[in-house]
Image 1 (cartoon, one colour):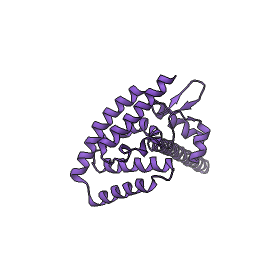
Image 2 (image 1 turned 30 degrees about the horizontal axis):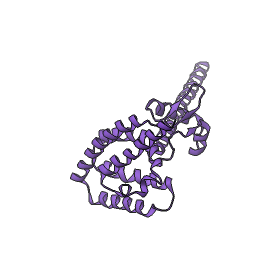
Image 3 (image 1 turned 45 degrees about the horizontal axis):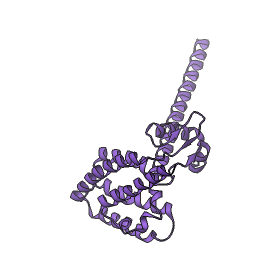
Image 4 (image 1 turned 60 degrees about the vertical axis):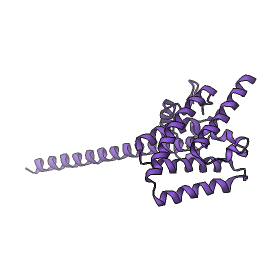
Length: 229
């Protein structure tokens, strides 16, 4: 009897340890998934808001240092973003932000004007006073930044202005599509400075003119560079 009780105690202790190990393993997997998603979302946001420039080269270690995390979740995030066309990767492990051609920009301009115009129309129909106040605040921030020379602050403010409006439409499926377009065009907002933003067209705040004129400027720029090569 004593021997049987001892064996039961050993078995129970073993089962308890195995349950603890399983729980820790599940916790580690959950933490890994959370870090991967956090890295993906942060790099994605930086691409959309113009934190990186077209053609800019990046490394896993550089991004990990920038985000303050280990390289492993960054590597997984980069794979996802490369699959979405937001990052170019080569077999020798270099990667960079894609430089869009004039044809790419024309296609994206036409899609953006249509979809972001729809998002704006829907937002106007149901926008709250709180959202209106936030949109006005974003616009004031853009105006205040003009002439400061702080391009990164401007691209971030422009991104915030647009997406404050689009979120007010309460169309999550449309918002995800628009975000995918900004993943590719966001870095190119940097190329609007200082040339385009100093023009009269560059001061326009109407949504269609803001998108169409800005991308038209980028198209001409891309065509000029292609002709010079």
